[in-house]
Image (cartoon, rainbow, N blue to C red; front, side, top):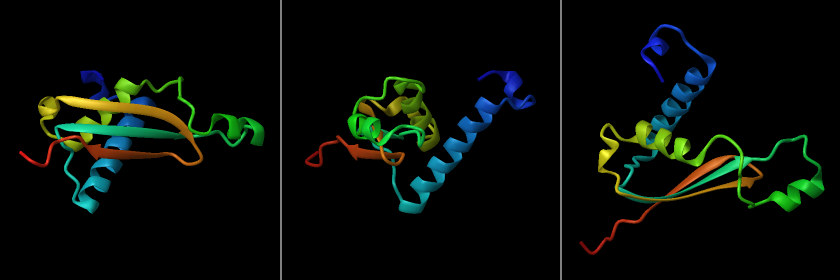
Length: 112
């Protein structure tokens, strides 16, 4: 994003901001605080245009198209934390699924 995005609202920036707002709202609704070490799984919904055979073959398969995994992680961190520089460990996966969703697990040790 650029300074120009403050006054010229490009569709890609508006989608990003909407995603961040929805993520923030979901975290607040569940009282979830993003840990500094976490595992995250992005499940991308398969297109309705795919045949049943292709859908069955791709279920759970790695998603190798855009958006990039690193950008998706950054968007979640930006939305969930005011200061995301504290995040030190991330394990991330991006796969195809029947419905789109994001699952996050803490990797922080509970015995500390």
